[in-house]
Each structure stands twice: as structure tokens, then as C-alpha cells.
Length: 297
Image 1 (cartoon, rainbow, N blue to C red):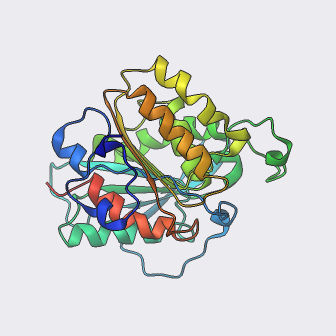
Image 2: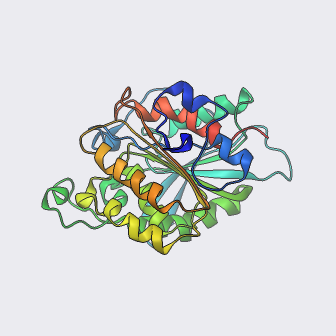
């Protein structure tokens, strides 16, 4: 197996500026690109994360969604020293409430920007209402349906982001047209599903310990046929995984499908991190992945 196909299991290797990605991509972007898929029995904990930590300055607003027929709260971090006329990449994140993952991701980005390690970006956090409804697609598995009263709403959640949230945010903030999405566990499942369901919606997809076991792993089992039907897909995919029993096998299957298809314009990497857990992967990897994918100019 060539060097670019090996799993980068150590943090030092992931930090390396010589990191190689699969696929044909602009050299500067390739050298900085990452992908991580990680789960650990904590996808249920994702809906009840409460972290008391200082947050950088941010703004919040509510958006009445016709698609979802509910009001959604949105939290936005933007660089404090925005320059007139400059436009910025926008990163969207599910689990984006102020008692969810938004504070630590916003802090990670703000610190990296201030230290000159990351290009300025705008972060858009989508606070949860019914997390397991929004993050999951349909399932035929009875045990999956027991996880929450309502599941299988990912298509509607995606339409909300694409048709309502993105136009609203990028009408208020100076977005450059570059869009990324980051998520962990069930939100990581949503990230990978979104790549397959709406491949042009974002240009960067970051999935950490994604719950690819959902619906008996159908998303992954369908991947070879989807990749064969989309040989010209152009995007960046970073997947990292830690949980070895439920997530690891499906993630390795996804990796094999990517190796076999070798799409020319998809820059991707799958990383095994057995030293991490489902509970630690987001906070451990966000400070590595985000600066690598959005290096300073």
C-alpha cells in the first residue's frame, strides 16, 4: 500500500505539514487536509453535553424554519478583527448549542486564529431540538428506532441548512462561498450522509467517530455503488475513528471503498485513533484538524 494510503494513527503524524491525502487536489490544500472518523459509546451523551467554559465573543439569533416547522437557535463566531471587504470560509456544526460543542470548537478556532495557526473563518453552531431525529436517516433496524421517539429526519434537517440557514447566514456575514461541516458521533454520521446525499452542499466534510453503524451500516454498504456513480466528486473528506467495535469496522469498510474507487477530485483521509475515546476525540482532534484544513494564508 502506498504511503498516502496508510492510516495515520499518531498525533505527530497528523500534525505533520507533509501530510498526504488521497486524490488529486491543489497542493497547498492537500498538504494541510485531514479526515477523521471516531465513535465511542457517547453519541447518546451528545444531546446532553454541558461544558462550563469561557466562550469567545459570539452572536445568537433564532430562525423560524418552514422546513422543520419550528424555531431554531443559531450561534455564530466571527473573527473579531474582520477586515472590510474580506470574505471568509464558513464552517457549520450540528451540536452547536452553547451547552453542547459550540464553546470548545469556537475556542479552538479563536485561539488558533490569534496564534497565527489558522486562517480566519466563521463558525455557525446549530443548537439541537431533537438531535436523534435530525442526525439520522431512515432505518429498518428495530433497535435503532428505540433510541428516540422520532428518528430518520436527516433529509429535512439538511434541507433546513441548505435552503434556509445557509442563505440567511451568508446574507448576514461575509462568507466566501467556501463551506465546511464538522460533527462527531451521530453528527458525524450526518456529515458523511450529507456528502453522499448532497455532495455539492459543502466543500469540506469532517466526521469524527461517526455512527456509521446506523441502519446496519447501510450508508457504508451503499458507498461503493455511490462512488462508482460519482467519479468526479470534488470535495475534502476527513474521518477519524476511535471506537473499535461498532464504529471501527464500518469506518474501515468506508476506507476500503474509497481506496477501490480512488475518485480523482476527492481528497480524503481516514485515521484510526485507538488512543482516544468517543468522549475525547472531538476535543483532541478539533485543534489539529481545523488548522490543518484551514491554514493561515
